[in-house]
Image (tube, rainbow, N blue to C red):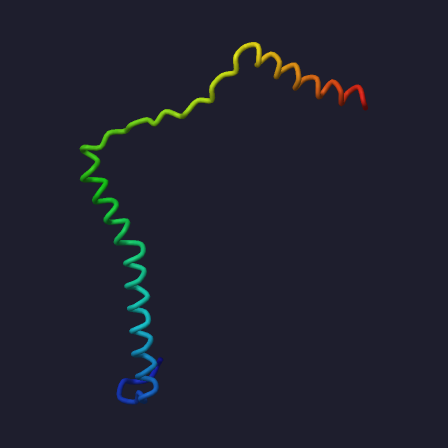
Length: 88
């Protein structure tokens, strides 16, 4: 503020005190939200890293159509485009 400490008024001292309290609370909330969870996750990763196993989860595959149904589907699908070409 550029004012010597002996010349600070009560209002200026209150402003400085409130600013310090606000910045302390802000830093504390940032620490709780970001640093501590990251540090905790990192530590858990170190502990679990030596015993962890990677397991691949197989995706459920869509059952294949029987060959006759597959051919019918393909011909019906292609017929839609042939009808559009003849109409145009």
